[in-house]
Amino acid sequence: MRAAFYDTPGPAKSVLRVLDVERPEPRPGQVRVRVALSAINPGDMFMRLNSTPQDFQRVGEHTGRIPHQDGTGTIDAVGAGVDPSRIGERVWIWMAGAGHPWGTAAEWTVVPSEQAVALPDGISDELGACLGIPAMTAHWCLHADGSPRDRTVLVAAGAGAVGHYAIELGRIAGARVVTTVSGPEKAALARVAGADLVVNYRDADVARQILDGAGPVDRIIEVSLTDNLELDLAVAGPGATIVTYAAQPDDPTLPVFRLMWSNLVLRFALFLTEPREALLRAATEITAALREDALTPLPVHSFSLDDVALAHEAVEYGLIGKAVLDLR
Image (cartoon, rainbow, N blue to C red; front, side, top):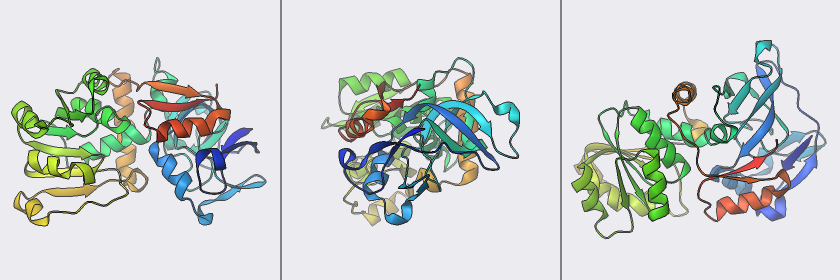
């Protein structure tokens, strides 16, 4: 089979290549998926740039890894202990390549059966490929400190992938959702997702707009704590929680007394180390939302497998929406 591959860290065009490798066979508890779309996330950039020799494993005759965690496809083989009736099932995939080298940037991948979730009838490959890391991260950020129902949630960067699903899943959960964006195009995307209030974070009076429009917020889903901590502190109500799911090159300086004064909770969230039960709950509730047509895809930009390096560069340059490799 053909697969994207790298065996050393570095820039996309320098290290990513497409190889012919042996098609994997599912082990007990696993399914093999014929990949339709392989979705690219910022975390894939981090892994490519920061991998060490200990991160690489055997892939047929090669040692390295096939990138990407998310995607969609159809199950065509199952391992021992998996119901054979799953063969032929369309699925969305999460956390492929965790603990083994078989990411989704290949014609086939293998994952534990529970990490290939049935796509409801009528749901497109494009929507399914947008889920995985973004939607499951958003779900954890919303629910890690209890239900967000009847709470005011501030979502930083509401036009981003995690932000988009934090808005939609927040509304499903009964929250009032406020979001910040950088301009009109992104504001339109956030409004389509269902945000109750959309504010341009570049405005001088952004904090006042949020407080006047929604009041103090109870939960903040943060993508850039270093850049946004002052705004977060300005709009957070007493006992609020700030959940940050991304790391910047420069760590923030924490104003400890100000955090203490409002009894704020500062939580850090990482998809790869999220509790297993929380991941499974997220997969179940995301799929339920799909059945209700309550989730929408991001703008999807398709690349061929041979253009995997170009697709990675598009993500690094701030592509609005989701970059995917189309292997159909």
